[in-house]
Image (cartoon, rainbow, N blue to C red; front, side, top):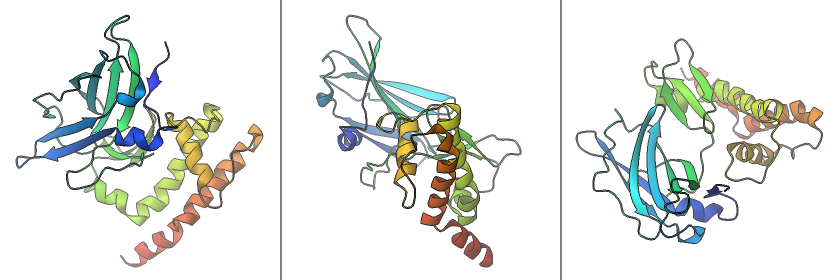
Amino acid sequence: MPVRRLNYTSRQKNARSDVDIVLHVDATQHAYFDATLNLSGYRFPPDARVFLEAYRQTILMRFDLGTVSAPKLPVDRALAEFPTADEILFRVRVTAASGRPGVLLGEMDRIRPRDPDKRPDDRLPLLPAMPDDLGEEVWRVDFEGGTTLLVSRDLQDWKQTTRSDTFRATVYPAAMRQILERILLVEKYTATDDGADWRSLWLQFASRIPGSRPLPSARNDDDEWIENAVSAFARQFRLRTRFTAELAGQ
């Protein structure tokens, strides 16, 4: 039985609004979550089980949210396994309760929670940054379950580093080139209409940058297309100009 994904194609806008997760941090810096789910439009069996997973790297916590017909948040929603609330992601999983119990029926992954004082965000970040132990490397693209920009946690302030124009100008084009090469040249993936697949989302994004081109039909043109897309990205955000201005201001 194929897995029915809570996809971002025909229900692109609704899919994001159907799952709203709010991340709270209390006065003692302990994190907990609230969640609102609406799965009525996905035709899951009423008795199917719903689970919410919070994860970051190797840390995972799973919460039972009841059934599709009667979802219910657990009383204990503390994210006690996580030392900090930074870069925690969530996924919703719907599994069969009868017929073939435990079989995965649907999934929405890489959900970024919002702060309590912010409105729900319909965007899907393609390259969220996350701290990690990288030795002497400053950054690395992780392809596990999508694309994540791992940044050395040993930097004095890794979040501030990723916000700098110097970092963005030197890292983001290289990361984008690496990702597109992985998709087209290594995995030879070319579909642009699957809103639930990270590779398709990247190809959509790269094709829609002003000055970029539609994905070529001939595979021997992929290298040129990738370089054009990266150049268009750099132009759109004026990376060299901002890089130079930031260096001049130091």
